[in-house]
Length: 383
Image 1: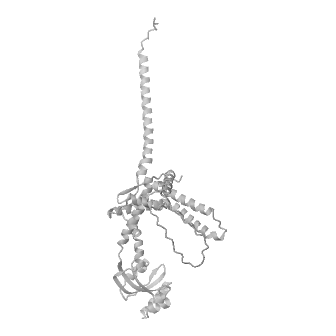
Image 2: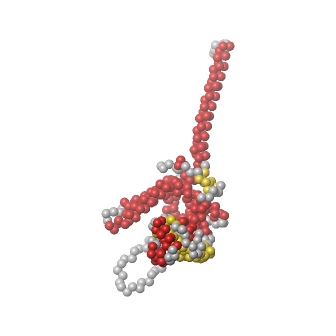
Image 3: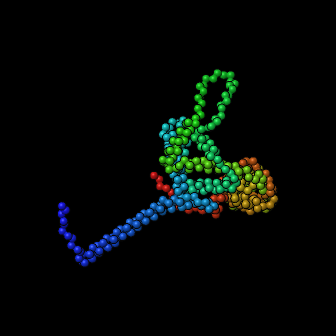
């Protein structure tokens, strides 16, 4: 049998009104909490978005409208730090096993100490060096694309293998015929066995793992570094092939003295009719040309210091310059002859070919196509 409860009494108008007010207050409170929570989440989300999306994606440099992201820059800084730290550790290990008090080891100690100082200097300059290197790489890649220069994955793989000491087809050693008639008493040094494919794969795998763990660098980024090296080498070869083999050149001689007063006296004696070559032998302080009457031979632009070069190329055959001041002293220059299209000296031509890429990059870096947005807060902190 169901027990009947006491019937519920109806709410008064006053009670109903109070309950409605309480419900409304609760709704208002919930709305305030929700809005506050949304605001907090929005602020945190905006901060996260700014810190981990906007800032890393912002360009640290732009090369011909192609941005270099801060994220990529920070990755490369971390990798270079990892690379330098490894090299420093190896040098320090070498120093640890050497004894500077042993005379036979002192040269090696000095050598490794100099290496250590150079590596530590590279650490100090690393943030800007990385930026310059990334700008150079982008300039090179763009120019390579313009010239239809390509790099294949196979070329990258071979470059990596060589860097790790593995040769796919090592040269077969050829024995040197022995012609000596005296008895050989020295024990031959055993030849080190070439690295096997398995050894390379193991070393490479271990390095990639260590690189990812310590620097956060992916294998793809690592391979891109080698790709960049090959692009650099190919563009260097292309630019070297384009270096002109002839150039405007002048044949000149000069008299070098230490002070302006001495140079003025030389000038007066020349104006009085004395022979230039004779005065050069008597007065010039240039050990390389004084005995030859000051004769410098033929030279193109780019071989002499700027002030000297500008003065020499401004002369006509037979003319003598005013006093020219350079870092070497004070010069009086006489132009003997000039040729608008003379073959370049082999050594100078080889030098120009070797510096073809560096000269091209130096010009490109200063162009309006390269814009930098670097600031110290974009350098990742050292962990």
